[in-house]
Amino acid sequence: MDSLPFHGRVGIVTGGSRGIGGAISSLLAKEGGTVAILGLPEDRARAQHLASRLNGAAPRLHFYETDVGIYERCREAVAAVLEEHGRIDFLVNNAGITRDHTVRKMTIDEWEAVLQVNLSGPFFMIKAVLDAMLERGYGRIVNISSVVGVSGNFGQANYAAAKAGLIGLTKTVAREVAKRGITVNAVAPGFIDTDMTKSMPVQAIESAIAQTPEQRLGKPDEVAQLVRFLLDDKAGYITGAVYNINGGWYM
Ligand SMILES: NC(=O)c1ccc[n+]([C@@H]2O[C@H](COP(=O)([O-])OP(=O)(O)OC[C@H]3O[C@@H](n4cnc5c(N)ncnc54)[C@H](O)[C@@H]3O)[C@@H](O)[C@H]2O)c1
Image (tube, rainbow, N blue to C red; front, side, top):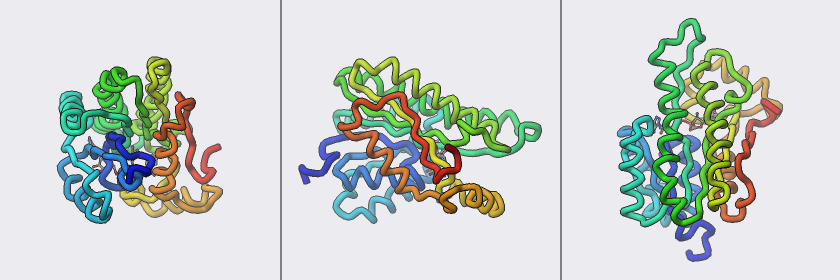
């Protein structure tokens, strides 16, 4: 077991009980990592279900009920992880929501809710973990942005703005902590087969697939493999980068 690549590593995956986050936390736990899944109350049972499918790796998955849109909750969760596991090597800011409408129909609440979770959430989490990483002179941070943060997308002004902002946040924090052993990168997935895309109208999915050169949706595990690569010790010279993973939808 000591030979597993993430043996002894401890980290956080927000929204890590299902979809892309679920694939990331499972992969890291299977590779020996201890993973704190931060999520909403409804994510607790899913996190338990995920752990139940992991056999030997299950004891390395831990659930912390945390709304990442509230700074105080983020601070409490990080303090609990440090108290219980002693260190934080990596942070994956994955939790995200959509509230789609064209700008004319989008309510202020819809705008604010998406900015709060998808942009303020990662800022809160980074702020909460940074001192612990700086103290040890080591850290890996990956922010899950989206292709639409770069391309824009009809009906997603709030989501695209938050995901574009996340790229700016990634590059800025990367510059601020580069000398201190901490890397900060973003991954920008295209259309991935998760509950988030299942909630889209069938026609919108069919059209997305038709416009994707690979002619299919991506799989959560394909995104997880890329994130895992960026979290590896060996990825130490990669920082401030944005990785597309979209089957060619945007190049
Ligand atoms: N699915 C896609 O096609 C796609 C494409 C590009 C980017 N993304 C991004 O990838 C990430 C994961 O997407 P997914 O498709 O797996 O989504 P999902 O909806 O399947 O899962 C998101 C998870 O985040 C949790 N969450 C939501 N709000 C939260 C909050 N305030 N605090 C804590 N947890 C919260 C949810 O409960 C859920 O467990 C998101 O940031 C999303 O924007 C997804």
